[in-house]
Length: 374
Image (tube, rainbow, N blue to C red; front, side, top):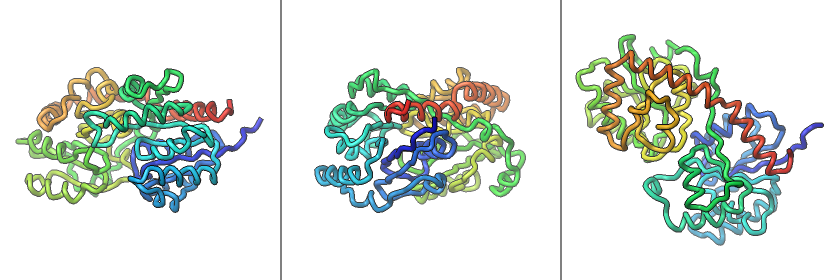
């Protein structure tokens, strides 16, 4: 019996290129359902939409939802829901809260909320008013999905979400895509030499990613290692400030701000290690991709990262300052055999636990259950 096509409306604070947007692209492009997917980016940024050819975007909707005028925002959001009449509303993080709120008490359709993390303003603790609103609003969702056990525990304890509504779905990646060879032409284009020892990261250049911390940590870690290099793949509002920092710390010849790259898998296998310097994360896709590529991870101790990596990698996930990160980076720069051993263990764990096929199946099954398709 053919599956009935239904409409799923995704409301994002932004459809910039990032982890949750890449996950949606995987679901849409490689999923097995025939549902129609629509999306609203409340800030008007639809940069990632090019990766989802069948996604129907609504660029005229986001800008008319005023921030700071809650009642007006609720009224406008509800009017759009009444017009669209989706079979499922999926909201993402705090920035889409007005849409979840507008559908809470007289629901137009079933609702799922996906929480990928918190903004920099809540990296140390939740804002009280937001915590109370989350408890009120998300308790009306059929499912609240988390890619992180850390977030799941917060929702259960702080938001009082029931066990029946909680759904843990770990992020997954295309294992074949990230386990391929290096593109030597791309390596040459960046100016790397065969003897270079490269630390790399892939991140949106936003404040919470704290790439400045990584640059400072690399500066100290690479002391007396003349062939050490740092490659930063990504773009964002912090790029001019980071360029100034690179020049100020005299590492302009060893740190490369590469900008965005559509195929980071082409360069990951060439790295000695992958670095992450964020103030806040949960279960970052970039870490999983690096693990599949056989890399050790040096990271701040945020979110689920210490539990994501293999046991031999755990000692390299430490603290939240440049000193701890610098120590981990220096060890990996100096100990090539150790780095390779850790990378192999990470690849084994990623292949066992982080398949995008399993992730797609879980999301599709959850959406279908909520819409009454099972």
